[in-house]
Each structure stands twice: as structure tokens, then as C-alpha cells.
Image 1 (cartoon, rainbow, N blue to C red):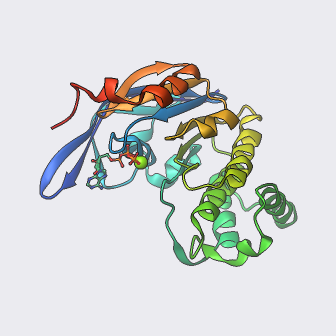
Image 2 (cartoon, helix red, strand yellow):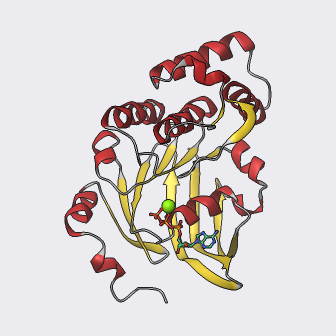
Image 3 (tube, rainbow, N blue to C red):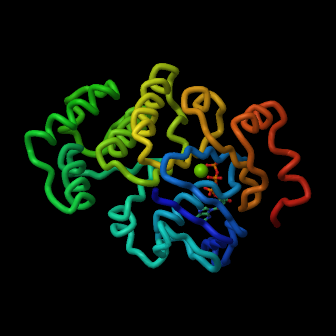
Length: 254
Ligand SMILES: Nc1ncnc2c1ncn2[C@@H]1O[C@H](COP(=O)(O)OP(=O)(O)OP(=O)(O)O)[C@@H](O)[C@H]1O
Ligand SMILES: [Mg+2]
């Protein structure tokens, strides 16, 4: 079983000619088959954690380690991370003009699987996944995320996850902006992948609503650039009722 280990991760970002430390010692272990939810106030560094693991060039790792099965993830190029089985569904998915969804998915799958998927089975695979996510087949010919509604972008992220079969998936606010039906469809998609037992999921969210569909094994409170508390699913309800004040107070960054 694959294991992602984050140890004492410190990350800075350059903003306005100053270096700002955003992550201040994150410790987290995610194993294949487990689901972890991360909840925390705006600006606490949740997306920074996701981007840092994925290898976004804006973020500088100043201390700590990230390993996947003992392999140094931080030493890998972005595409190597994907090939190693890491997947990030971004909070704000980017448009890729000139590249159709169908081409994008096939190119990604080819890169990750190490060989081009057989055309016949591939077309079937894509069609089935799109149908399960209730995506109009016409989306396959549209350019990636171009003119997609918020909810359509999120479905497209889950479509990628389903086809690329990552070992570790980070879903950054995949539930934001979804209507109730879309939330159910997207959650069912995540659960289908989860049921294979072959993905470890890190679900960043603001709402317990999605956690009613996707039951987390662990819930972590993220505040001031680190994990302030960890618990089971019941912790999410506590947070919804009491908010984050107890975690932010006293520990607020400059
Ligand atoms: N590229 C960047 N340039 C400048 N500041 C940044 C950058 N990325 C993150 N930050 C800052 O780091 C802090 C954490 O941002 P981050 O997006 O990680 O928060 P978050 O926990 O994901 O918040 P939200 O819940 O609103 O999505 C914020 O103060 C943000 O302004
Ligand atoms: Mg965020």
C-alpha cells in the first residue's frame, strides 16, 4: 500500500518583495485506501499545501520532507510526481485553450500509464466515466475548462481522477460551487474510485455537506500553516458548530 508522508513541511512564498512563510511545520500521513478531510479557515494554507505537494513553482520548500513510499517527492519534476501516482484537483482549475478534453485525457493517461491506452477500450472507458458523472459527451470535444461552468470544471477534475487512477489524490475544494445534485454525482464519483481501495484521498473542504457523502476516516483542522488537531469524522461536526476561533486565537500569524 502506497503511503504519502509529509514531515515538518515549511513553505514560503514571495509576495510584494517579501518572503512569507505560509506552511509552518505540517505533519501528515496518508495511506492508500484512507480518506482524510482537511478543514480550516480561509488563508490558513490549505491550497498552499496542495500546490507544494504537487510541485507548483511559486512555493519554496524551506524545511521538511514529502515522500511517497520512501521516495523523495520534492526531488521529482511535476510530471514525475504524476507518474508516481500523485493527483491534484485544483481549487481553481485552469483553462487549456486549444486542447480538447479528449486529447488532454488521452495524453495524460499515456504519460502516466507509460503507454497509449488501446483506443477501443479507452473510448469506452471515457464514455462510461463521463456518463457516470452525468457529463454530456459533447464535452470531450471542448477545450479543457474553456467556458466550463464552475460545476463542470469540478466534474472534469473527477473524470481525470477516475481515468488516471492515482495512488494519492488531493481534492482542493472540489465541492465548492456545486449544486446539490452535482455534489451527489461528484461524491459518488469519488466514492467509486475510493471503493477500489487503491486511492488515498486528501479532501480539502469548508463544508460538512460533502462529508455526509464521502465519509472521512480522519479529519484534520488546519490553522496558521499547520495541522492544529486531528480526529475522526465527529471532529467535522464540532467544527461546523463551533468554528475555528479556538484554533486561530493566540496562534494568529503576523
Ligand atoms: N502565490 C502566492 N502569492 C502570494 N501569496 C500567496 C500565494 N499563495 C498563497 N499565498 C498566501 O498564503 C496564504 C494561504 O493561502 P492558501 O490559498 O493556501 O489558503 P487556503 O487555506 O487554501 O484558503 P481558502 O480556504 O480561502 O482556499 C494566504 O494569505 C495567501 O494570500
Ligand atoms: Mg484554498
